[in-house]
Length: 263
Image (cartoon, rainbow, N blue to C red; front, side, top):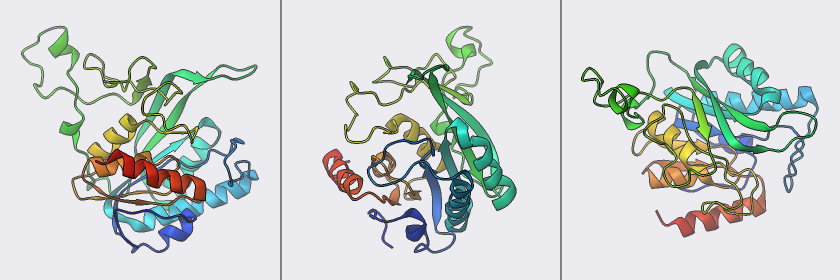
């Protein structure tokens, strides 16, 4: 398998072709098993089958990660608890952070409150040895911005583990006066919207994850490429990248997107 390219294949098949302990960072945004209409994947598996499949691909993530590697997982309410248990209790990951990504432009629902958040699990293999570039993601603190307190750390502070996403924040989504992540879902009017994938991950989310959990020239992998956001951001940030996409149509669109970005 080569780096700085990606493959049209099943993610488990693809990861089995990677040497154990070769990858620095994995970001995964798998199907949520909620009945979303993908072009070829059936997103409504039997409960047990979905969990077994999840355990299989997460096991491969564990295998290919370096001992100091990091695994970020995006998942919805329906299976967040189950996948956390699989990753930690069954496979051995340590959950370093459980982030709630909240977006104010939510998904309209019937007879229930609007769906407006996703869970982001930050998993590591070794609690004493993992990449966390805190200076790369620090923000000004209230002591700096409001109270002008000379005791404030001039580097700022780390964000909290709730990231709030607003539709009006498109240029500078991480506002300096807040300690939370301000990034919205990629909506139809956004200029980064590709238009061919309805579950496009915002570049700002991936950018912060890659900055904090990897270094230049590190190897970043996305098992479920979807709209190709991870590989585009990894390329921009000078990381080596690869990933897998089972859909031929999405794969071809990812190739066009990567070429057109021209990082």
